[in-house]
Image 1 (tube, protein in one colour):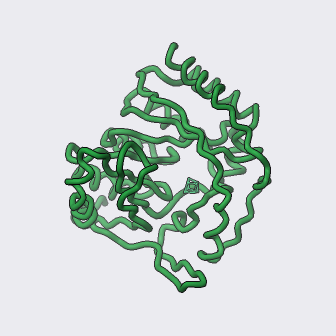
Image 2: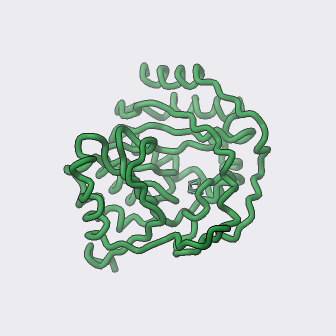
Length: 261
Ligand code: SF4
């Protein structure tokens, strides 16, 4: 049985109060804990487990994960309304924010129309939750990783069929979205993956014109740093030292091509 909005709590592992790179303008970014994926390159390992956990370092330990009620989180975000309203808005990130879909939906309902809402998502969610959340968002940043299904399972631990279905739905129904490709050496930056991304966009997207662009996200070489703090080993299945194959012209042409369909 679904809980009432007032009974819902959400687990948050960080709130960045004035972030500059999580969407247009100045953002307050809420990082929700829990993720169904296990990306080999994940740089937020404390965002994966859906329970609070201690992060230990030389300077001591801190608890990653605090429960908020919908009212408490919305109230905190509204306390920045004067600054964020015209300058930017709120971004939900993770982990995978949709892992706590009910809490996210209720929180977004409170914010809707007062603050610009951006969702950063892997797209890995039940279709009905994905539709409900994206209908409330003003902008979506959607991660596109590995297109080959077997490689997607190998490097993220999950199948990508549902993810791509959610992307097609987003493309039909909006809101405006950007695709984001993390540049992981030998995994996402291969010629095959570029070609697969290009074909997928060409054959499946832009029916509603909501696609706003495609961003390449550089690999974060500090990704492994936090694993020890949460008691895990960073064991990427790719060569971290390899140079990523970045081809911005290729991606520009992909988006141009999609726009002209
Ligand atoms: S989707 Fe994001 S948070 Fe989840 S495992 Fe992958 S990189 Fe980490």
